Amino acid sequence: MSADVLVIGAGPTGCALGTYLARKGVKVTLLEAVEKPESVVGESMLPGSGPIFDELGFDTTGFLVKHGAVFCQDGGSVRFDFKEAEDQRHTHAWQVQREVFDLRWRDVATRAGCEIVYGKAIRADVPGKTLHTTVGALSAGRIVDTGGRTMWLSSTLGLRVGDPKLKNSAIGTRCRGVKMLAPDEPGDITICCIEGGWIWIIPFGDGVASVGVVMSPASPLRGTAEERFAAAVASSPDATARLADAERIFPFRGLSDFTATSTSFHGEGFALCGDAATFIDPVFSSGVLLGLHGARGLAAALTGSAAEEAALDAWQAEYREGAGIFRKVIDHWYAGDFMTLALAPRELQKPYFRRGIVSLLAGDVYRTGATASRLMADRMPTLARAVRSSSLGA
Image (cartoon, rainbow, N blue to C red; front, side, top):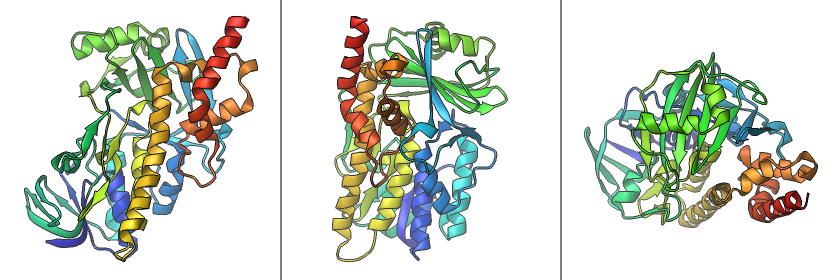
């Protein structure tokens, strides 16, 4: 079996890439390991993905609409509404269950003409452009790995590099009976800060939510997944209040040392996109957005012309820049600068404070002319120091 492009993984990134390519007349085969997507803990979309949802005709029916984000720390809280972002084209996103979300992306890809083959990759001959799988050898003009944070092809080719600063772990589940408390509004994601980490609450409606804990090496939490989860919730008055009557309805899922990137996103006969190229801490829910924008850019770069390698270099640089903005702000998050600004007295929160923060939360990092998110990413430590000085002076 042969194709022009063979894509490993039929998740959102792979299906978006396949759809963009198929619309250009490229023959695309998607290799997917799982016929029925797993009921993973959940995913929170960003408004910055909206243009790609629109371009590809993705059906968001039934997903809970998300208008903003709430951040809590030690009983203090603040809500940011996407209407405050610099980009006003998309002022909402969605909270999605991946077992539904991923199947809809497969529908998008197959309608565009992509073929989905179910099997697992075993060995890659690169640059031979042959992928050996559990369903036989597959060949293509280029192999693209979009298969997720295992970064299979990147690791196989010796390109994967772990992050020396972020060695975090996470545990997540789903709960029923989760409360919405002020300043939450329907559909908001809630992030609760705790010592050495944070808790996420992603609502799906009717009191059901994805709930999890991310822990840095500095976290004091120890024990089993259930013990760490319970201790994390107990350490946060904000999470405790929202989860007081909640019951767990999903097994715990764990993940560790997940932040990594690749030294190159493309080479002779291959490319890497989405989490398979680079995966960063999920505090700002950037994963799907980065994957979708990476897919759109990669599809445009794969022209088959003499200028293709130069186009791929430009795509990689742009892709890294957008991911780098999130990576920079994640450092500010763990340094405490983000929450210093978020919880600053309203009189200290200049309009550009909130516009910059909300633009980052909305994922406005790839739009031509986007300035608020970049300026905030660069200036956040300086602004946080100014807020702290003002608070001390008061």
